[in-house]
Structures are given as C-alpha cells and as structure tokens.
Image (cartoon, rainbow, N blue to C red):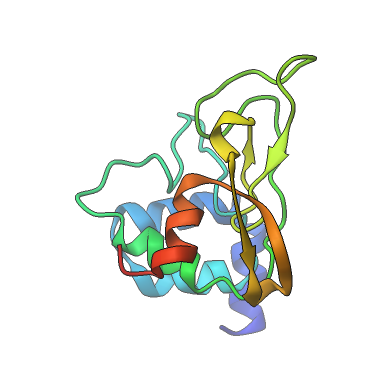
Length: 140
C-alpha cells in the first residue's frame, strides 16, 4: 500500500471503522491492507460492533486476518471488556490478548499459548478466537 493510501486511512475516520465496513462487505483485500497498516482490530464502532462480534456466515475472513498478523498489534484501551462488556474495576482487572491486542477481562482471556511468530516463546494470555487461530491456523 502506498504511503498516500496509509496516510489517507489514518486520517479518514478511525482505520478500524474502515476495516469494519470492509469486513461487513467481505472485502478481504482492503481488510488485509488495513491490518498491515497497523490498525487496531478489535475497536468498536458507535453501535458497539467490531469485526469480532459482527454476525457473518463464517469467521473465515477474521481467522485469516488474525493469522496474517506478523507483529504484536497496538493494544486497545477502554473501561469494559471487548468480549463480554464487563466493567473493569477493583474486582475485574484489565488484560490484553497478546495476539490481537483486544482489552479483555480474566474470563475472556484465560487461555495461554506461545506466539512464536511474535518471538513470545513462553505461554502468554490470548482470547479464545486467537487461541483457535494459533492452534488451527487461519482455516477455521
């Protein structure tokens, strides 16, 4: 992708919103380009929708996008779990999936696995979807 395209994607709204629209339309090429540009994958739009919770017939595109990650993505931030919406506080701590960068509670990030492609050779915390991607590859 050209520097001009990257610059456009980074300034035209939030790159993750563009990726969500491309994901909703099944535009795999645009999704891949946006992921390569470093967009955060799990951010919600104004309606609370993201590529992880958007209802599609198959999660094949999501699995392929996650499988193609070649470096740890930027971590997401917030006050609620991106998976179950639990509010973080004294009893509910924040955790990050080390593969996709989403902000999660303990219950939604209980699995651990090494992520060799990120040079993380000891088991690290991941979400259920990323655990499946890392154990099965981008074919599920």
